Length: 287
Image 1 (tube, rainbow, N blue to C red):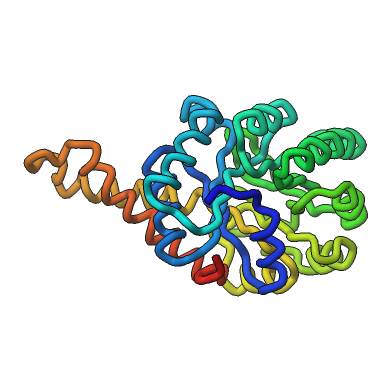
Image 2 (image 1 turned 90 degrees about the horizontal axis):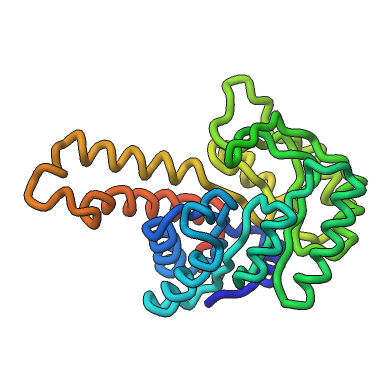
């Protein structure tokens, strides 16, 4: 069922596990993630970047698709539709479209403007019963063409944003989107510990979940991370399975060119990847 992410993340903080946020890019992606969540009795967050939303014909289309899928597939675990790295205008569009959870990424504004815009969105989301994620300290890597080196968040700024009444906080602790470079220094647990100290039980969000070693993931969860974003790893799995299908000539056999057959190996590969992450995050049988 479609819900805000608030309760599922509060439960995750108490239970010392994390809920997976899996970005969706089309019908196959959404179906794969929903079915895997149901099969493993796990709460789940379907992330939609503004670029992916535009590709899927807008937030209204995505929301209608997911709501219909939940009904048709008889999904009973908690599901949130979540705008990922939303702009101020994009957040308002996603709210109008019926998304149950919003991320406003104001990290590229100066801090006072980030605070001001976040405060306004807190009011709107509270009135509508939606969960709201804010960000302090930019996340590195590439997200919809925006490239950043990543920043270490200031714990005092984190506290100020948290005190506005947001649901969850994304903070830069050395994490990046996409593939981690060979010289990556790892997550800054010192920073994460300081942030946890000042924000208390507020669920923290770890972006760039692809490629972070399992022991660092588990340590981050122990320090208050309750939502972990995964996108690139599912894309790699989908691409690899599709490539193997075509290179094996399966698309030339019978009706192997039918999109329903052509995309099936990639669909199954997403399911495998999502289940692996749910196991790592500890969210299985937590719905």
